[in-house]
Each structure stands twice: as C-alpha cells, then as structure tokens.
Amino acid sequence: MADKFYGILYGEKFTDKEQTAYAVSHSLLSGGSLMGASVSPDTLVSFIKGRGFDGLIVSPEYGKTVMPLVSKTSPAARDVGAVDVIVKGADGKLYGDNTAIPAFAYLLGRVMRGELPRKCIILGNGPDANAVKYVLSSIEGARIDVVTVTEKGKNNFSNIINHADADLLVNTLGSMAALPFSFDYLPLLDAVIDLSFSPLTTPLMQAAKERGITAANGIPMVAARVKAANELFFGVEADDDILAPVEAAVFSSLMTVTLISTDESLARTVSPLLGEAVGKKSFDLADIFEKLYCKSLAEIKALSSPGSGELDRMLRVAVEWMKKRSGCIICIPSEVAEKPAYRESISAGGPIIGIVRPDEDVELLEGFCDILVQIPDAEHADVAVEAIRAELQI
Image 1 (cartoon, one colour):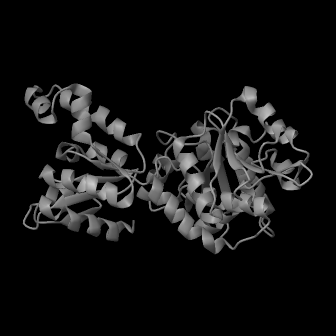
Image 2 (cartoon, rainbow, N blue to C red; image 1 turned 90 degrees about the vertical axis):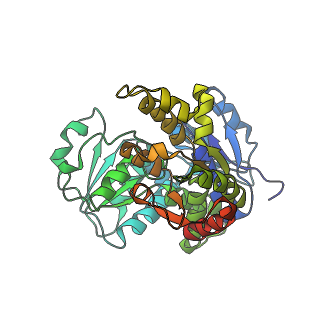
Image 3 (cartoon, one colour; image 1 turned 180 degrees about the horizontal axis):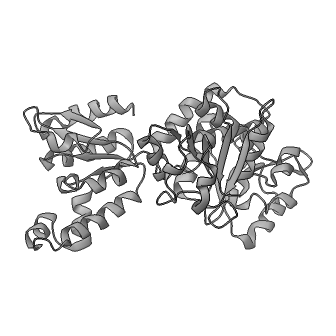
C-alpha cells in the first residue's frame, strides 16, 4: 500500500468533521492513510482524467459530476445516478460504484433491529436520498411507502402533516440549525436517522429523543461506506462486525467533553490534563471570553447593569464559539450553567462533566451535567482525569 494513492475527493461543502470521520474510519479498517484531494468544480475533470490515484472516495457533492468520467459503473450506481467511489483497474480504466447503498442498508438494520418501516419520509432529494430510496425499494418482500420532502417541493415542510402515518424519517439535507417542522405532525414515528453528525446530537435527533423516538446520526454510515470502498480498493471483503469499534473511535475523535465546576480552579486544572491524556486540545472558555472582550467575566458581570442583557449577549457569543468546536476539551465558567437555554447547545457536542468537592452542594450542576466527578481539591486532578476516562471509555 505504500506506493498506492487512496484518497477522498471533496470540495468546499465537505467539512473538517467529515474529513476526520472518513480518515479515522479508513485508518482503522485498512491500516493506511486516506489522502485528502480537495478540488474545485473547475479542476475536477482534469484531476479525474489525470488518473493519479488508485482509489477515491467521492463526497456526495461530486457524486453526479464524476459519473460520466468513469469507464464503467455498477447497475446500482446507475440507478441511484451517482458514484461515490472510483477504483482504477490494472488497465488504467476507472470503475465507479455507490457505497451509500450498502452503508445505508447497514445503518437501517442497526436502527430498526430487524423491523421494517411501513412509510418513510426522506428529507432531501440529492444522491444520498436516492441511495436511501434504492435501499428501501429493494428490500425483498417489503412494500414501503417512500415520500421525499423538500423545502419547496410538492411535499414540503409546511404540509408534512399529510404524511402523519410515517414511522421512519431520514434526513439527507445535512445539518439543520433547528427542526423545520413539529414532530406533533408525525405522531407514529418510531425512528429518526440523521445522516449528518455535526453536532453529534443534531437538533433533529434531540427533538426525537425528547419524545422517546429512536434516533441515530450518520457515523455508522460513514464507517460502512469506507468499509465498502476498501473492499473495492483491496478486493477483500469483511464482516460488518468490525464496524462497531470503528464507529466508537470516530465518535470519540469528534466528541467534545465539557468541564465545569463551581470552584473553577477544579475544572481549569483538570481540562489540560484530560486533553493531554486523551490527545485532544483543551480550551478555557473564560480565557476565550477575556480575549474576545478584553475584560474578565467577573469584570463584565460587575459592570453589567441589572436587566441590560449585556452579560447574556456576551455569553451567547461564547457559547456559539463553543458550538463550532469538536473533538476537544472545553472548560466553561459556572455562569453558563445558570442559563438553562445553553444546556442543549453545549450537550450536542458531547457530555458535560461536573467536577465537585465531596461536601459541595451540587444542585445547580446536577441539572446541567451528565456526570459528576468528585475530588477534594485541584491537586487531585489526575484522579478526576482517570474517572472521566473510565466513565466515557476514552
């Protein structure tokens, strides 16, 4: 493999988190590196025709564009209308296939646990949506009603109530800042699959979980796509059982761990030690806050007039900064925990850990944190690090 080039072809729409997910998956499944090939629409054709690669995973934004550039495609890829993996044969000719099909079939099986949906709503109509439709329509002996819903199409967010009998919803639109409709209109939903995973718990997943609906993000599908691509690259098939640890590793690499303590010296001491122990960068939000506003949080709090909302506005800016981070450790000031509105935004990236003293009143943190870890003082930060690693298995 040392003299082979296996890469991922992507453009501007491909995020850093997606690059990380694919790279980690490929490394664990093949033992090799997945080289990044960032190309613009203007250079895409020349890159493919140059054939300077042995195999490529293609991001969905280029799935349709690269299809005419390969010599042969699989029947499934032709049905879906997109290629998301390209393999160069010994004769130099390019073969294209679609790994989203087996990958979504795997994810569907994981989520539905052997049950089949009666009616599925698919949000979006791009290449991944077509792969989802292909899988649902190809299940032997099943007659699944599939409806595509887009923002402005015949079936859209405003009339989604027309499909109140749907029991599965799949989002292929990418990350949405907020749910564009109410789940009140879909009372029979049993499962929600969001092919996005940024944040790890998306607004769509959060809304589903609040109603007790099974929800999953797209990390298992990424791992399964890479597995299917590697099988084409190397000609060796593998069992799906190998995917569980890969998914866990991808999740861990993208997970942000948030630390908080009422005595801020505890969290501020634990944060860098935890980051060093698990190979993640650590940030102190209070320090970021001071860099943003050239004043400490305590100074701003003292200067803010009651009811002005100035402190809250500044905290919102800091929390928005946090939402854009992934795969790191962030220490947050206790003032953030006083604002219930921030809980969902912060927890979407991963767990919130409270660092407390044994005799401390933890009422405030209990309502904000997923896990509480006790240490007597900052000198025992290493004990907190080991406890957190054991709890999160990182």
